[in-house]
Figure 1: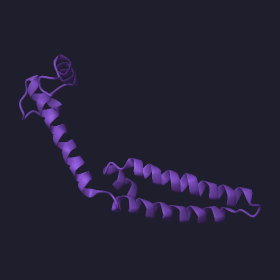
Figure 2: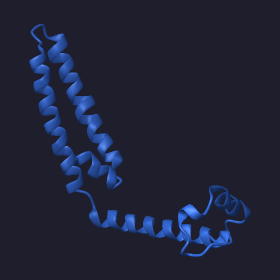
Figure 3: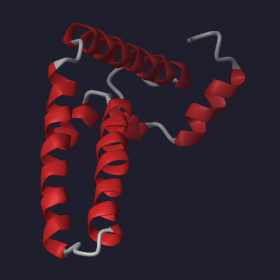
Figure 4: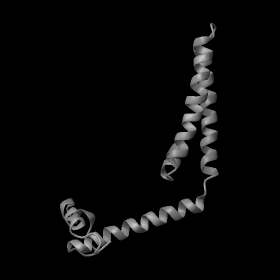
Length: 123
C-alpha cells in the first residue's frame, strides 16, 4: 500500500532510495553474513532478518509520505492536469473538431499531422 501511495504522488525516486538502502544495503549484507558466512546460519535467521527489514522499510516509506510537501505536490498535480487538458483541447480544435469531441473521435495520425504542420499556432 505504501509503495502505491508514493507512486501515485510521483515520489518514485524516494521509494527507490528507501528500497535500495533498506533491502540492498542493509538486509542483503546481513543475510549473507548471518546465513552464509557464519557456520551456524539457518533459514530461521534469514526470515527473522527479512521480517525486521520489511518493518524498517515500511517505517521509512511512511516517513517519506508523511514528510512530503503536500502543498507542492498539489500544485504540481494541478499544473500538470491543467496543461494536459489545454493541449488536448487545442489539438482537437486544430484538427477541426469541437471542444465536445472525445479523444476517441480523433485518430493518432490526425494529431501527428497537426503537430507537424505548425505546433506554434496552437500551443
